[in-house]
Image 1 (cartoon, rainbow, N blue to C red):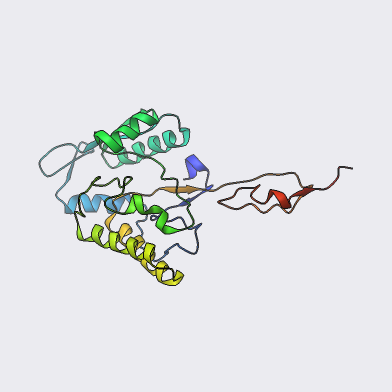
Image 2 (cartoon, rainbow, N blue to C red; image 1 turned 90 degrees about the horizontal axis):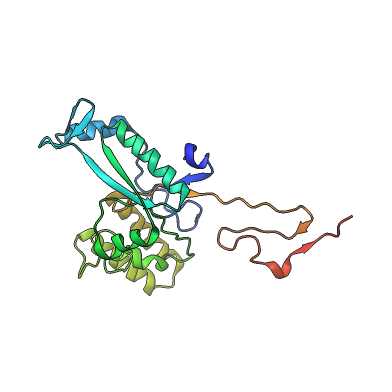
Length: 231
Protein backbone atom coordinates (compact mmCIF):
# COMPACT_ATOMS: atom_id res chain seq x y z
CA UNK A 1 0.00 0.00 0.00
CA UNK A 2 2.90 2.35 0.71
CA UNK A 3 5.00 1.48 -2.32
CA UNK A 4 2.24 1.33 -4.95
CA UNK A 5 -0.48 3.68 -3.67
CA UNK A 6 1.74 5.90 -1.47
CA UNK A 7 -0.78 5.36 1.36
CA UNK A 8 -3.62 6.71 -0.78
CA UNK A 9 -5.67 3.55 -0.21
CA UNK A 10 -7.47 1.73 2.58
CA UNK A 11 -6.37 -1.73 3.66
CA UNK A 12 -9.15 -4.23 3.02
CA UNK A 13 -9.73 -6.90 5.64
CA UNK A 14 -12.90 -8.24 4.06
CA UNK A 15 -15.54 -8.04 1.37
CA UNK A 16 -16.69 -4.49 2.21
CA UNK A 17 -14.57 -1.35 2.17
CA UNK A 18 -14.58 0.80 5.34
CA UNK A 19 -15.70 3.64 3.06
CA UNK A 20 -19.17 2.06 3.07
CA UNK A 21 -19.57 2.90 6.73
CA UNK A 22 -23.18 1.81 7.18
CA UNK A 23 -22.67 -1.71 5.75
CA UNK A 24 -19.10 -2.21 6.98
CA UNK A 25 -18.56 -4.81 9.72
CA UNK A 26 -15.41 -3.79 11.57
CA UNK A 27 -15.69 -6.78 13.94
CA UNK A 28 -14.70 -9.38 11.34
CA UNK A 29 -11.57 -11.46 11.77
CA UNK A 30 -8.47 -9.64 10.52
CA UNK A 31 -5.10 -10.99 9.44
CA UNK A 32 -2.30 -8.49 10.09
CA UNK A 33 0.90 -8.76 8.06
CA UNK A 34 3.18 -11.19 9.90
CA UNK A 35 5.79 -13.26 8.01
CA UNK A 36 6.86 -14.77 11.34
CA UNK A 37 3.36 -16.12 11.99
CA UNK A 38 3.25 -17.48 8.44
CA UNK A 39 6.47 -19.41 9.01
CA UNK A 40 5.10 -20.79 12.27
CA UNK A 41 1.95 -22.00 10.48
CA UNK A 42 4.05 -23.63 7.76
CA UNK A 43 6.04 -25.51 10.42
CA UNK A 44 2.81 -26.56 12.14
CA UNK A 45 1.59 -28.07 8.85
CA UNK A 46 4.82 -30.02 8.35
CA UNK A 47 6.41 -27.68 5.80
CA UNK A 48 10.15 -27.09 5.98
CA UNK A 49 12.87 -24.89 4.52
CA UNK A 50 15.75 -26.12 2.38
CA UNK A 51 18.31 -23.57 1.21
CA UNK A 52 15.77 -20.84 1.93
CA UNK A 53 13.02 -22.43 -0.18
CA UNK A 54 9.75 -23.67 1.32
CA UNK A 55 8.89 -27.35 0.74
CA UNK A 56 5.72 -29.23 1.64
CA UNK A 57 5.69 -32.36 3.81
CA UNK A 58 6.31 -34.50 0.71
CA UNK A 59 9.41 -32.53 -0.22
CA UNK A 60 7.87 -30.57 -3.11
CA UNK A 61 8.92 -26.91 -3.47
CA UNK A 62 6.00 -24.53 -2.95
CA UNK A 63 5.24 -22.43 -6.02
CA UNK A 64 2.28 -21.15 -8.00
CA UNK A 65 1.42 -18.78 -10.83
CA UNK A 66 -0.42 -15.48 -10.42
CA UNK A 67 -2.05 -13.71 -13.34
CA UNK A 68 -3.30 -10.15 -13.65
CA UNK A 69 -4.20 -7.86 -16.52
CA UNK A 70 -1.19 -6.30 -18.22
CA UNK A 71 -3.07 -3.08 -19.03
CA UNK A 72 -3.46 -2.16 -15.35
CA UNK A 73 -0.19 -0.65 -14.19
CA UNK A 74 -1.15 -0.59 -10.51
CA UNK A 75 -1.97 -4.29 -10.49
CA UNK A 76 1.27 -5.11 -12.28
CA UNK A 77 3.12 -3.23 -9.54
CA UNK A 78 1.09 -4.92 -6.79
CA UNK A 79 1.76 -8.36 -8.27
CA UNK A 80 5.48 -7.59 -8.41
CA UNK A 81 5.51 -6.55 -4.74
CA UNK A 82 3.51 -9.67 -3.86
CA UNK A 83 6.05 -11.87 -5.66
CA UNK A 84 8.85 -10.26 -3.63
CA UNK A 85 6.94 -10.81 -0.37
CA UNK A 86 6.36 -14.46 -1.22
CA UNK A 87 10.04 -14.89 -2.12
CA UNK A 88 10.90 -13.71 1.40
CA UNK A 89 8.82 -16.66 2.64
CA UNK A 90 10.59 -19.07 0.32
CA UNK A 91 7.67 -19.34 -2.11
CA UNK A 92 8.21 -18.93 -5.85
CA UNK A 93 5.49 -17.02 -7.71
CA UNK A 94 5.41 -16.98 -11.50
CA UNK A 95 3.78 -13.75 -12.69
CA UNK A 96 1.60 -13.84 -15.80
CA UNK A 97 0.62 -10.46 -17.27
CA UNK A 98 -2.22 -11.18 -19.71
CA UNK A 99 -4.81 -9.24 -21.67
CA UNK A 100 -8.13 -8.79 -19.91
CA UNK A 101 -10.18 -11.01 -22.25
CA UNK A 102 -7.78 -13.92 -21.72
CA UNK A 103 -8.12 -13.54 -17.96
CA UNK A 104 -11.92 -13.50 -18.14
CA UNK A 105 -11.83 -16.66 -20.25
CA UNK A 106 -9.62 -18.40 -17.71
CA UNK A 107 -11.65 -17.31 -14.68
CA UNK A 108 -15.11 -17.83 -16.20
CA UNK A 109 -14.81 -20.60 -18.80
CA UNK A 110 -11.66 -22.76 -18.86
CA UNK A 111 -10.71 -22.30 -15.16
CA UNK A 112 -7.14 -23.01 -16.24
CA UNK A 113 -5.27 -20.88 -13.72
CA UNK A 114 -3.88 -21.05 -10.19
CA UNK A 115 -4.30 -17.53 -8.78
CA UNK A 116 -5.59 -14.23 -10.14
CA UNK A 117 -5.39 -10.62 -9.00
CA UNK A 118 -8.38 -8.60 -10.15
CA UNK A 119 -10.75 -5.90 -8.94
CA UNK A 120 -14.38 -6.66 -8.22
CA UNK A 121 -15.47 -3.09 -8.82
CA UNK A 122 -18.24 -3.06 -6.25
CA UNK A 123 -19.43 0.08 -4.54
CA UNK A 124 -23.11 -0.67 -5.18
CA UNK A 125 -25.12 0.93 -2.36
CA UNK A 126 -27.20 -2.17 -1.62
CA UNK A 127 -25.54 -5.46 -0.51
CA UNK A 128 -27.96 -7.58 -2.55
CA UNK A 129 -26.25 -6.24 -5.68
CA UNK A 130 -23.36 -8.59 -4.86
CA UNK A 131 -25.44 -11.76 -5.03
CA UNK A 132 -23.76 -12.96 -8.25
CA UNK A 133 -20.42 -12.98 -6.43
CA UNK A 134 -21.48 -14.22 -3.02
CA UNK A 135 -24.11 -16.85 -3.81
CA UNK A 136 -22.86 -20.32 -4.77
CA UNK A 137 -24.76 -20.35 -8.07
CA UNK A 138 -23.81 -16.79 -9.07
CA UNK A 139 -22.18 -16.25 -12.45
CA UNK A 140 -19.31 -14.31 -10.79
CA UNK A 141 -18.80 -16.81 -7.95
CA UNK A 142 -15.06 -17.44 -8.33
CA UNK A 143 -14.42 -20.21 -5.80
CA UNK A 144 -15.80 -23.59 -6.92
CA UNK A 145 -17.68 -21.84 -9.77
CA UNK A 146 -20.91 -23.05 -11.35
CA UNK A 147 -21.94 -25.12 -8.35
CA UNK A 148 -25.17 -27.09 -8.82
CA UNK A 149 -25.67 -26.69 -5.07
CA UNK A 150 -23.58 -25.28 -2.21
CA UNK A 151 -20.47 -27.41 -1.69
CA UNK A 152 -20.00 -26.40 1.96
CA UNK A 153 -22.16 -25.51 4.94
CA UNK A 154 -20.75 -22.00 5.08
CA UNK A 155 -21.57 -21.35 1.41
CA UNK A 156 -25.10 -22.63 2.02
CA UNK A 157 -25.35 -20.22 4.96
CA UNK A 158 -24.24 -17.29 2.78
CA UNK A 159 -26.84 -18.30 0.18
CA UNK A 160 -29.56 -18.24 2.83
CA UNK A 161 -28.39 -14.91 4.26
CA UNK A 162 -28.38 -13.32 0.80
CA UNK A 163 -31.89 -14.62 0.13
CA UNK A 164 -33.02 -13.04 3.40
CA UNK A 165 -31.36 -9.75 2.44
CA UNK A 166 -33.28 -9.79 -0.85
CA UNK A 167 -36.53 -10.72 0.88
CA UNK A 168 -36.62 -8.22 3.74
CA UNK A 169 -37.06 -4.46 3.72
CA UNK A 170 -36.14 -3.69 7.33
CA UNK A 171 -32.74 -2.01 7.06
CA UNK A 172 -31.37 -3.09 10.43
CA UNK A 173 -32.36 -6.70 9.83
CA UNK A 174 -30.71 -6.68 6.41
CA UNK A 175 -27.63 -5.11 7.96
CA UNK A 176 -27.41 -7.93 10.54
CA UNK A 177 -27.63 -10.54 7.77
CA UNK A 178 -24.92 -8.81 5.75
CA UNK A 179 -22.65 -8.46 8.77
CA UNK A 180 -22.82 -12.24 9.16
CA UNK A 181 -21.98 -12.68 5.46
CA UNK A 182 -18.87 -10.55 5.96
CA UNK A 183 -17.88 -12.51 9.07
CA UNK A 184 -18.13 -15.82 7.20
CA UNK A 185 -16.11 -14.49 4.26
CA UNK A 186 -13.39 -13.23 6.61
CA UNK A 187 -13.22 -16.57 8.43
CA UNK A 188 -13.24 -18.82 5.35
CA UNK A 189 -11.11 -16.59 3.08
CA UNK A 190 -12.35 -17.74 -0.35
CA UNK A 191 -10.98 -14.43 -1.64
CA UNK A 192 -8.03 -12.43 -0.32
CA UNK A 193 -8.86 -8.75 -0.25
CA UNK A 194 -6.06 -6.23 -0.69
CA UNK A 195 -6.78 -2.50 -0.90
CA UNK A 196 -9.47 0.02 -1.74
CA UNK A 197 -7.95 3.08 -3.49
CA UNK A 198 -8.88 6.53 -2.31
CA UNK A 199 -10.26 9.00 -4.84
CA UNK A 200 -9.04 12.58 -5.01
CA UNK A 201 -10.80 15.44 -6.75
CA UNK A 202 -9.47 18.85 -7.71
CA UNK A 203 -11.44 21.88 -8.89
CA UNK A 204 -10.98 25.64 -9.15
CA UNK A 205 -12.09 27.51 -6.06
CA UNK A 206 -14.47 29.72 -8.04
CA UNK A 207 -16.79 26.72 -8.46
CA UNK A 208 -19.47 26.58 -5.78
CA UNK A 209 -21.72 23.89 -4.28
CA UNK A 210 -19.19 21.14 -5.10
CA UNK A 211 -19.96 18.04 -3.03
CA UNK A 212 -17.94 15.04 -4.29
CA UNK A 213 -19.24 11.58 -3.38
CA UNK A 214 -17.66 8.11 -3.75
CA UNK A 215 -20.47 6.95 -6.04
CA UNK A 216 -21.42 10.07 -7.93
CA UNK A 217 -18.10 11.81 -8.43
CA UNK A 218 -18.05 15.60 -8.81
CA UNK A 219 -20.90 16.36 -11.20
CA UNK A 220 -23.73 14.24 -9.78
CA UNK A 221 -25.50 17.50 -8.78
CA UNK A 222 -24.52 19.46 -11.89
CA UNK A 223 -27.84 21.32 -11.99
CA UNK A 224 -26.84 22.92 -8.65
CA UNK A 225 -23.27 23.86 -9.57
CA UNK A 226 -22.29 27.44 -10.35
CA UNK A 227 -19.13 29.45 -10.77
CA UNK A 228 -18.26 32.88 -9.49
CA UNK A 229 -17.50 35.39 -12.25
CA UNK A 230 -13.83 35.87 -12.97
CA UNK A 231 -12.42 39.23 -11.93
